[in-house]
Image (cartoon, rainbow, N blue to C red; front, side, top):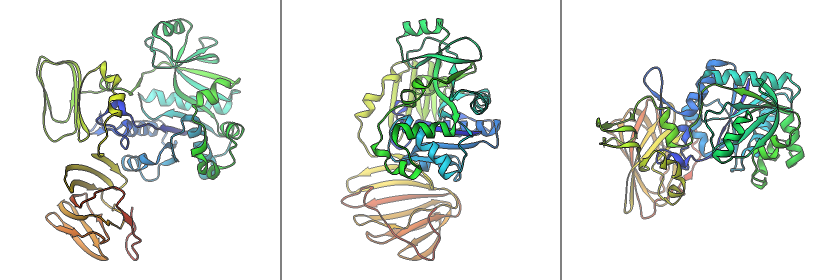
Length: 443
């Protein structure tokens, strides 16, 4: 089974845990059987592999998410990188070209496309496999999954099938309606459009040629920023005559808001939190190393991270985005392919950061023109290279790098470092990568 997971957007509705560099699908909030926590992307990837261990998974995403994907999944997962955001049709066209031209997938093979962030069980992925089989052997060019609605929602588009069979031709698509209209659609047997569909690879490649002049993967990638922003539904699905919908009646939740996300939490809190016995329907997610105390609250969500603190009525939390758009500050936490960093303090002429490097990984060899840096190793073992000189380091060691001096660090074990940056102008743009000859390359 070939699966393309769409992983786009910044997920600002789950601020302060999500931001421009850390999207909602990377928040570790779901408890696993061993008591650890996993993210949406980790959960979905694990579920796919449990249903079909041979499934070929490709994630269509932006460049800013690649490091987090490698960090949370593995280095060899397929990734179709979007140079910029252009909505779902260009993203799917680029992914199709990637599968054919880069991964060597034949045009006759079926591909399933679905979002990376629904909260589902394994029967959903069994249905995806059935969807792929239908696309490969049936007469339709496009096979959609229609979610059996559980309430008249105004958040989703609707698919109205011609009949109530498990698989039916599509009668008509309906845009996001009012709740009253949604009730009418449900009476007609309408299904939620969850953005899940399957096709033979050559079909989308042909539609891309017709609509955007697609030639090959590299051409499409190079001209991606000139493509019109348009969804796959508008560009393709609503114009396709040979189209079917397959019903899915299993559990399916959209994790787009705090209200829906907390419904999937197994506990009323993650992290250090105390809720007294007068609290009702209250959930706390705390990523800070300090306790949160809640007393007498009802229907509330409290979320705390290095980015900020949210205290909100659960229903009101759905309207968070315009307020978060007004917040303009330094990114305080980010995952990278080599590990992660968290800003501890920002002062006049200084910034203090806690850096965690995964075993076997390291930073680029680089220098800064406008700042000095001091590394204090607080845990683990590794190696530094400063101005060409290599040394082993462990907890308690201090390394100083004046401005202009090239440096890097590699982790032999999990390595934690407190980095202090000192300078009149501290900027992410003040970094010059340098080729390090006769030494281990950056991972």
